[in-house]
Length: 284
Image (tube, rainbow, N blue to C red; front, side, top):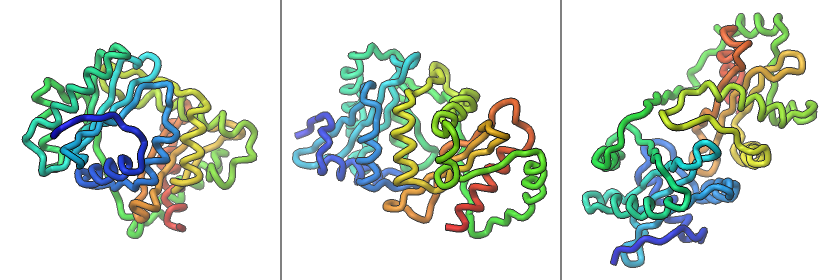
């Protein structure tokens, strides 16, 4: 018998969601502990759930969704992960229809999903197209091998910026005693992320500071690859952060954000941030 239930935070459900995610994902892999930690720091003021698709005693798929913040409060962002052997049975449609009922509580009027151009997601892509979704934004994903990376050619750039007074610091290990460090770090992130491209209908919104700190604490304590901040005097002017997930894939690192405030752009600071970050990662 097929049925759909809401997520109850049980160990079994976390384990099954992790298993299904890893069956579909073509690149990154999830670990159940990382999944639990991310769920624990979610913003509980926003509607969020995972709908679990059961066949008898088995969970064969799930749909995760989340409500947007502030100006985006009527937006819903979702993804579906289905055991591939159950493709072609309209199970994605069952999950989708159930979600559409649930999100009436916040009067949702826009739906967003993301998908990779990869065979693992072809059935999901066709499902979205059949439900009249369209491509609103394309993002390229790049990777590199740190072991073969030669950073020496960037030394003149680093020396040039140093002569201008631009300094670079490890945000976790060198900056905690800086005055108002976390307030300035959050303000910096908000300043430059407002220039990131967004699909039509999604506004840039600023999360509450306490929510920012929950994510920052999780990053520093459990997922810290490196965080580098560019500083001019006492002004934070740019930053980048790279995440590592030791339990699921300790040999990969994932870029979080990279940006520089407008008045400091076109000086090579963004490039220097990456060089500094990669150099630190190579030491680990």
